[in-house]
Image (cartoon, rainbow, N blue to C red; front, side, top):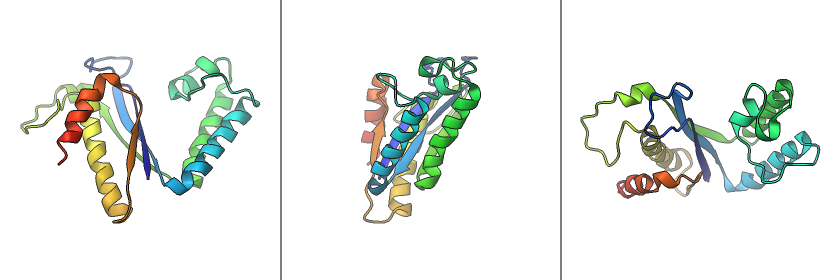
Length: 174
């Protein structure tokens, strides 16, 4: 099983950012048997949306897709068209029976965390807190929900500024 994890709203140490008060860390998990069908369907939907002319170096970002006027490759596209695209893409999760895993934080509340436990990470940093939660949850999910012979592979979006924190959290799992 593959677990694709990404974040939205990560402003680093700026937990009082009024523009992005919420941080979400999450993603989708899918079995290796469903990967190809998912990829084919995703590419078909995106290609159809852009009439066969997918922009160079296209990467789907919800902030561009769902911003009021559309940004990046979606600039100038109607909200109705962009919303319909989002719904078609979300339907892949349903049609392929994929699981979604996430945790969301109100960053102002995380800023005020007073934790009495000794942790290998700073609990007032949403990315670290979310990563620790998700890695623990995914480990549980693989072992107890997918069966004894199941294996999981977690794939993260590149977060160079979090490498040391991720390594510290992963090293502390044993």
